[in-house]
Picture 1: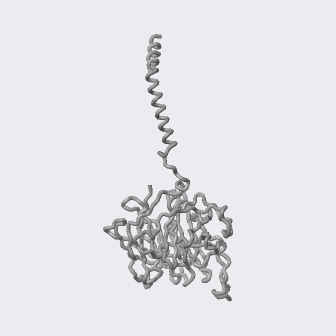
Picture 2 (picture 1 turned 90 degrees about the horizontal axis):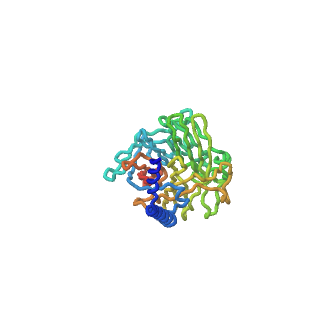
Picture 3 (picture 1 turned 90 degrees about the vertical axis):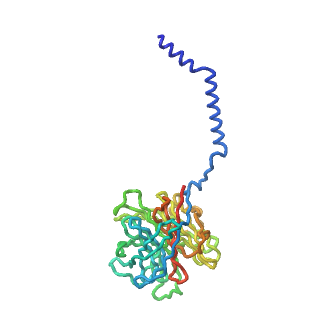
Length: 406
């Protein structure tokens, strides 16, 4: 019993009124400070739009020009798409030549991002595209524009399409060594244009649906899943039209172009369209004769992309790099036409990352884009390349950006 009393006295001493008062003052002051911080300006206000996008910027850290040259008897040029092969450290470049559709293998030498050691581009090989039987395509059957490398080390190549030339929009998977078509990817029927009858001339033809002339599948991107990889690893494919389908086109100049982005899942056994989304272009610059999205690249597994928009007119080129967020976009797979009011449809959201007009370089026909290797800074690199249109006064120039994120 005495031991119990001693314990009781000790505990009672701890409850000394003066000490208790000091403790309560400390608690009260801490609470007031917390309320002031929460109610005042100490905490930054984060908008819904800020939460939608990644904190991302692009910094130019290098540039190089591919010298004019012939390779295997053909001029090297017309580069409309590029894809970087990480394990082999090589760059594939698609030429949009309809007579002999082909892709090149480029080697990029030099330390990327080092201004004291500018990189150089050289051509290693050329591979001509072939049909499923292994025969070279006849001239005018393909209009190659988009390209992406797959986890199983093949190339996906899109045909933009030309109603007047009776070239249908298409996406094919090609062997990376031989250029032979391995399989075709399903394209919804609404993308296929009606074409001139044999009795009609192209001048008499009036199209009613499908992709517009040279405004089909310009942009391709692949998103590898977070699994272990390998030949049997399913992956996601994204394909965007450069311009709106004819049935989606509003002819009023104050209405933005309504492009479509297709989302596929692909494995060795089947191809399935997961969703389709509305991509609204910014309004075309005054006098623009070309205005569209030329390339996309997947940033992460959460629906974030980079998109390259390109315009051309009497004011020259306008090239802008956007960050895209597709997470809240409406699935429009069952919507046959986007013409008119689309206020009930949530489009892919976008935020400007870089206007290439701010660079200390003349603007050219930049339309190819891919992620490159990790830089010495441990940041991701982004390659953007121009199409010289096989013209003596235009360049095949590669821009190397460092992607900075917080």
